[in-house]
Length: 241
Image (cartoon, rainbow, N blue to C red; front, side):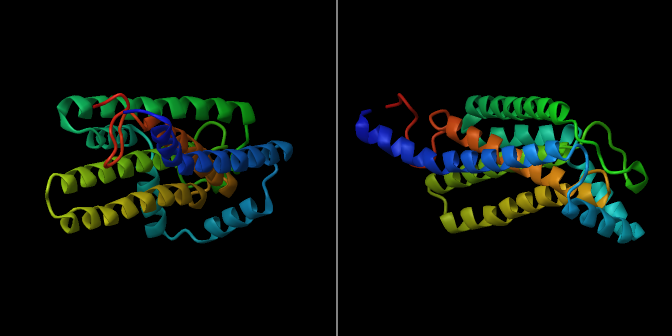
């Protein structure tokens, strides 16, 4: 039965996500204003990171960075979002629903990011420092944002699938801890994609920071909205019995 106590519990569950949204949104807004105010002139930290990257590019490291950066674009991230959404749903119907929601979530985030990129219109680093192909404006970094969003969706899906397996009577020790390394690897992948953009010279360091902050805002909003549609362990769906 719904009531004030239920509403309070739901608000408390949403509170951490709301805090993430507010903190990341404020930080992103401040960074975007600072970037815009410099009219294309990089920050000292941007120049230092680029100079270090250009001076430390042995062939093997450069090849690895290109492979990592390639994983943050194209079909692969969208496939990852679909898989994450499917894992979050239980059964075929809810799995398909979750996959569709996750894909729409990623596409909507990309649309907002494109609008920000075109509005802020920050130039990329000098072309002679590039070690891979790039196009368009720089802030916030597209590869960074995309990989962070997909990693977040996949972590959500893996966590829900693990909790679901535990609730079905299987040994928790065999499922939840097994999922933790995978979730950590997904987070590390997203970080690596962002860092590869700086290392390959196609983004300033603050472009990558902006991508992470924007992803934090979008993932936080998703976490707030997803309550009720995909209740957490031990929760009932809103309006359910």
